[in-house]
Length: 371
Image (cartoon, rainbow, N blue to C red; front, top):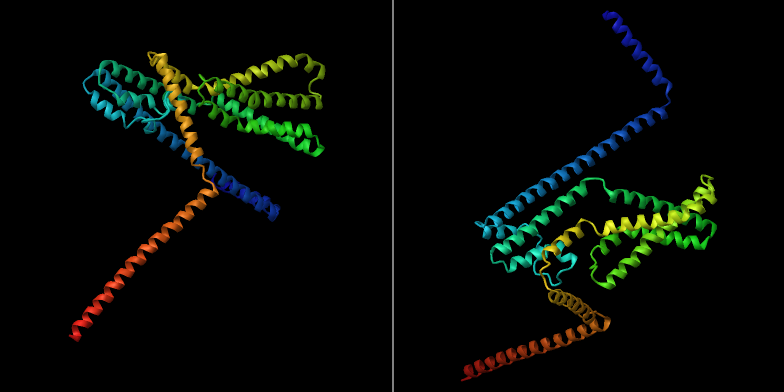
């Protein structure tokens, strides 16, 4: 039995040796390099996955600890025994950038916990104020939980990004083709469509900070939606129809019949994606806070609206006032020269006085010696 096993293993080795000898040197090098590259790539992927997992674990752990501390603060506020301790602990757990904000009752104000800081600045530890603060903290916990779920899961945002990059690729191909055949109209259309598709992500971040109570900002939102969303999607649909017709995958007559339906679906779907991205969990969180603050009078809201506008105008006037030009730089240089001259004059005067004093002393000493 042992002899037969040895002979079988020997045969396998001989066969392997024959196969290796048949391979050329270049083929052996290719195999080794392929195996080496595979090992390096797999090592990089493992490292990236491990570091990502470690980072997620760290963030999850930190967030869990933060949620626990906020829950304990809520318990102490509602219990009524350790309210002072709860408030002092809370100040180290909320966003410090929200403290003493100049512009109030806008999205950024709520997202930086400005409403919590304002409540804490006049906090009297009463039952009413404690209830209100605990409601704010409950909403903050809910918002953080929803946000963490969105970050971990593959949601609508991932699908929207996939669609967006697919359309960017399609429009880029059209741009290069249009350049080759000198089709000026499609060069411009594909170029602007690609630019708007790339900018969509950043536009959504900017537009989500708008105050939708303002008429001007509603107009900005509408125009941005038409230019950055509807236009590139419609143009991409046009490109898709051209490709399908070119490869005879669908008849033009059928497309003409169903085109109005497709257009309506494109506009509705783009609007849904757009509104979902703008009015995300952050906006839901803010709207819930505003419900708690509904006891504010219309006069108070008008006052803070005018106050915010005045503050922005002051900032603009300050920027205009201190818009540095070459003339300003030259004026400063001239002032510097004048100041230096004054300093030099004063120094020269001091030196002269010292020299005169020295001379007088020398003269006095000489006179004394002669006497």
